[in-house]
Image (cartoon, rainbow, N blue to C red; front, side, top):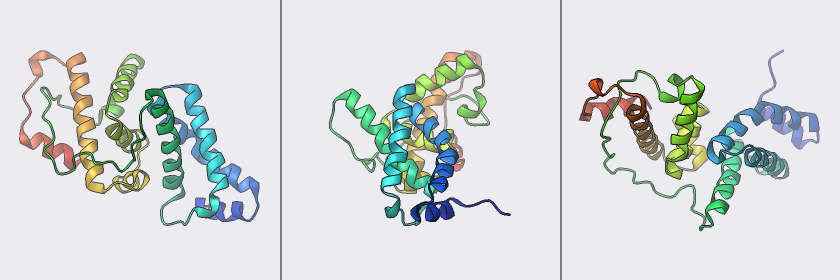
Length: 212
């Protein structure tokens, strides 16, 4: 018997089958917690984000129109709760997810670029390096950090990331490229061999963008 899809579970949950919603929770709570933790860097805040996300999803399940996947819909809810946590810390005005991030502008050139064949989030394995990468991710501008977490940590496609953040796919690619270049420079400065450092060229940016 084929596994029940998210949309089928949503329909069952709308009909009053609470076990269907519990299955949705078990499927998605792990990825949502990971995203919330990477954004808040606090275990309790991440737990609160996930709890509030599913409470809100249950309350507004009728508004899910299946125009996007359930994962994308609930991820967007979680992002909004995580952003509320971050903004309450900073005590500043709310900035919408769709705030412009310079799409179409020139991507700044980092001073150093390491010759990596895979994404840093997948190559850094040891605990101390992971902690350094997490710290570097936390220092990214909010828009870049959101895109990086969804695209390179959770593995969403460019299209799914754009839907979750209500951005254009082009804007997602620009933010992702900037985030990757910033993280590469941080790790290159920390661990790179100065003898192997090289100045970046235009084709470096083209190849990096092609990977998105």
